Image (cartoon, rainbow over all chains, first blue to last red; front, top):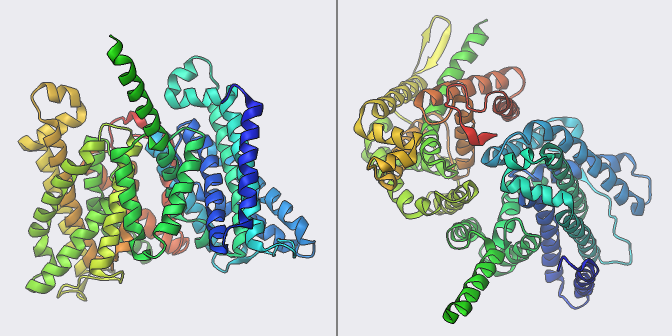
Length: 324
Length: 291
């Protein structure tokens, strides 16, 4: 697939067009589920730039959703007079910028940590951001922020945000794809496999990690800005969510860690399971998520894609064995 | 001046309890290299068991400690053999997510069984207090601190002098070498986990006496344990004690002088700072994988 980039892009855009037309036939409930699927898939791919490609699994990416959303919201509140069509791009600019600054600053100390230490330190970053956001009055975290209605009057807001998530998701996906097939992506892969060796062989590991971290954070922040607009009103608790922190890891784990399609498959599957299959069993949600995690780790540590790959290898091995 | 000393004394008491709550986590981390995200659940399990036992038998909650520890010892052994052992030698993320999954399931189960409401254990001497100079101490808190310190000393002695302790330390230092010397590593892993779970249960009793608790608290206790271990160093009761006392002091001082809603901020800033300048913790052995 990677040999023919034009064909790859065409296939992705084709899928996007099909998905874009889906709201015409889907009932409203499924448009909402679709929104959530696309949003989660976008986040999962943004997460995987750092967590999957470079192997730095972050447990605190909700920090960037929150910072992006609040930065955008506060900026839009000051500019309330402008037409709504302008507000969303301004919000995304401000939110993205805030995430870029935060991640660039945090990257210096945090990226020195590895493995679980990095994961938990990121959780710390998320909690610190949430707590500061909640307790500093000027940031209105506990009071809550209202977002202007940005959907054009002719559109159903649910469909509008569905298409917005889709567009954002495709952009994030293509960026991640470009990163993966570039020299930079190969560098990230070498960091994941063996950071010390990569460094010894002249890969600028520190710089690569930092760029991947900032890219991942900014894309997450932009999705957070859209998310805040689709909610219309946010408080600290609605954006700095620990279940988001967890889900981002689970999406990649479910689909296949370190792959490009894995997070997308994982996000679609998990959102479908929790929103549609388990929709009536709210009391059972925690238990089901936990059970799924346990089964995943025990039965399919490589995720769906890893499972398919090993199954194919076994079949090929079985096909060649009798020839001896 | 009094306020400073009073704050420090409160921090000391709280720190002793943090230390006991974290020591099991530290042991598992040091020996199995597993981040046990279900640690907080084990702590709460101890608290709920103590609550049930002490109200049904009408005895002092601290006296339920042997029974609670015995139950959690068995639970811990089974949990490790049946589940964690299967993920223990894979990626660290795998075992971490496994324990997280178990934590979610058990938290959900606890909500069904014990209701999501806040509970607390109230011993007969709940309201007694005494003064030492100008500083006042609650009888409850002091007895809990003493219980914590005694338990920590017991664990330290167990690790240092008993045959089991020697085997556990050997496995932690060089798993392969221990195996070559005839140590049944799986059994030791499971025993370590069982001991850790028993101590988590014991700390649950102490916590239940001092603070109200609910199933949603498990994350807090897991995180606290993690911070204590990173601060103090992995795998030793002394490290847990130092880390716990430090954390207790920092959180009471922050709550007193900066604002009651900021302990988490200072706690994590301290954590990140320490990870950067001294990744092995204040007392720990060099712990290579941290950076």
